[in-house]
Amino acid sequence: MNERFLPLLSLAFLSCMMISRPLRAALHSFNDTLKVNLATSKIDWKGTKMFGAGKHEGEVPLLNGYVIVKKNTLIGGRFTIDMKNLTVTDIPKTDPIPIRNLNTHLKSKDFFDVQTFPTASLILDKIKQSGKDSLDISAHLTMRGVTQSIQFKVSKNATRYTAHFIIDRFRWNVGYTGSWADRTLVDKDIDLKITIATN
Image 1 (cartoon, rainbow, N blue to C red):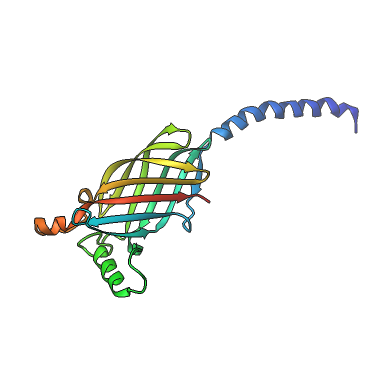
Image 2: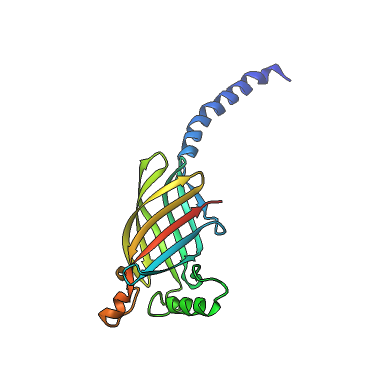
């Protein structure tokens, strides 16, 4: 190699090294948007009736979603919930008629009205670290065209996030609109356990 080019190559190498440091810092500050793994993410629900005398449980799948991570810390996210595919899981599969009847009732205008509102959404607004692997979340949940703010805690394990909280269904107009007896036959609280896994 011509010795005249050696100083130039050295200068170019040093220049690249000097530029790479701020570039690395800038790249490190970027946010990562991670898609939700739909196969391993879900929402488990539980509802009770007659002041806890009876209950039903089931699942609701996610239609799509993503989380936003910065420096391995959750800073945001948005999830679309597939209300049309809500299912009941606590009735044996050997009893298809009760399963069908309850599914139909829950999807009707009496409850989630999935023909009019086929999806619900959850948007994470404010996130505060409350422990090594725990977060305090402020979010907005939209169901039946009604958006309400909610707060809950999230636990993180690797790329999986879990939350467990209770909502008052009447805040989203979910339930009978008839007499007081009709409205109180099913308890107002819905117990939700959310599992979000990323790819």
